[in-house]
Image (cartoon, rainbow, N blue to C red; front, side, top):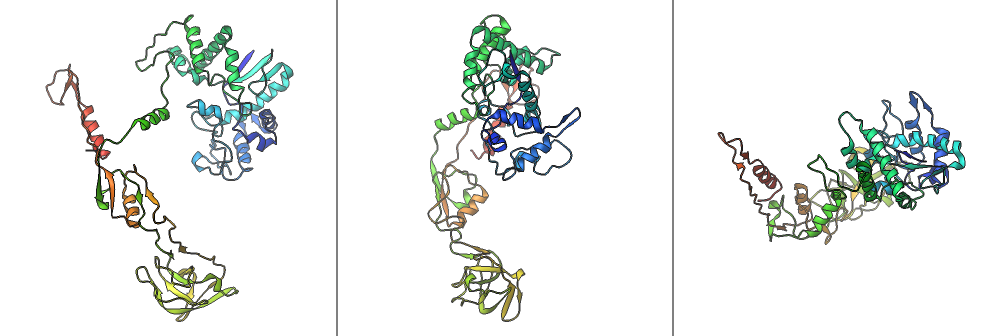
Length: 459
């Protein structure tokens, strides 16, 4: 008997080891079974996930608090996580496009809660049936009961065809999946599908992933009684056995095939916004070009501070300001007035905020403990002279114009604007106007496409 459950049987590699001390995923089943509290109207899945998160550095990996009350260590959004020590998805979920991560506990399509609540039930089934039950792919299937992980959305096309008016989609999913697996068993091809997932005995595997073509063919046979093609009431459907190219793969093909078809020109920086760089933009000087102060305050040498709770430093005459550097050097044990952006004078490597100081006519006072180099910027902290500031192919934005100016670049090489023409064809087309016969179609695509091209910066 093959029993399929529509939730993951495991987590990304490393999680079971970190939680139970064993890489055996079935040890994690027992761990959850001992800790999950499951009452008819309440359970502790969110609090348990928060407790697990607290074991690891950073924030996560679990997320999606579905309760009204906040729970410490369980963020409501996945973007609030950081420092997750585990992969975001299992290997099988990277194959099964559209499947969700086991870490997400709430939201449409989330499966994380089902995992936490379902694994204890499976653990009890294992204990109940003992050696008569095996769990694929963690164990070799025997002659009794085999538990497998399924994902009915793998057969979404067949489910769409089989779902009639008034039918419940989830029920149709179960029937179509069961019929397909039964047909494969009759054909003797089910064993081949089981071999695919056996290569991943730690994370688990969705039955059928990697064998989609075989599953779809079994679905055709089970729904038609033969290998004949199905008629589809769907003008967007692809032929049987043909699948959509994944978007990422299609984009890769497109990028590999594209080459520039326009010339290049050199333009002043002020005219470069919206253009695409034809050459790398190289920094003409470092930014900052020299060590300078990040604040208004007082500069001194950190290693000259006295070992006392309150620091008292005499002030030298003059000041350092942006564009008006201090002439001379600052003696050890003294300080100089310095403003934001001013070059650090000789003898200064640290700046204290003026708000942190008391001052009289000749000296300043502040509490000890300031870190060496505080409130200063190093030469080249943003970028060093000769480095690539912006790469060829980058579309220039206002902030990029500012960056290029900051590193001393007065003009840039860009591609000439691409000239785009849009031609509408078809006997049915007519320009929008009154009194046009109803068998004509107003040309709406051409003005839209021209406006889009103009918005993208093309001529």
